[in-house]
Image (tube, rainbow, N blue to C red):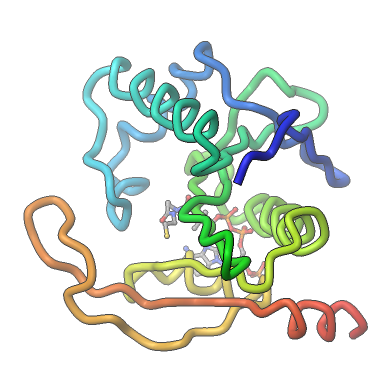
Length: 188
Ligand SMILES: CC(C)(COP(=O)(O)OP(=O)(O)OC[C@H]1O[C@@H](n2cnc3c(N)ncnc32)[C@H](O)[C@@H]1OP(=O)(O)O)[C@@H](O)C(=O)NCCC(=O)NCCS
């Protein structure tokens, strides 16, 4: 799905903007921490080159219409990337996409990712006209589970041995939010 020009999104505290090559240091700062990669399909980074490569990979996939990933920043400090979030695995004919996200531990438990996902869900349903937004999590990823449930997504079950990550097969729990549930929830 080609989403051009790259949309800049805002909420009361946040600005979601494109990720730039000079965000590599901020990305490395947290992707070099095991607590961030514990449930992530990436190894803990040991060089800043891995952060640069990840940015290039996101940018290349965006240019092919395969994903869109935003830098999460505070309105007062838009240059400082705190984390990222976005859509990938678009299934255009089914009007479906997957979300992914991570945040620097410095900013955990301040409602930042909840605020970012609120923006993302509104954009996905209202602007991309999606019918279904889904997320795959490690069933042990409690923070991600509560975040998704608070954001209105529901668990649809566990897919056993679904991903091969870091040399082993791991389970994945699938969460989803349907457009009509999203619209019904907005009225509450
Ligand atoms: C998952 C993650 C993005 C959550 O970000 P966050 O900004 O700390 O989440 P929020 O502060 O918006 O929290 C949303 C809800 O989830 C709950 N929550 C968040 N982290 C939690 C934790 N460690 N334990 C229990 N509940 C948690 C919060 O309590 C909150 O609900 P509440 O405000 O009603 O209490 C963050 O922990 C992270 O980056 N983890 C590592 C990367 C990762 O696992 N990404 C997802 C891969 S699927």
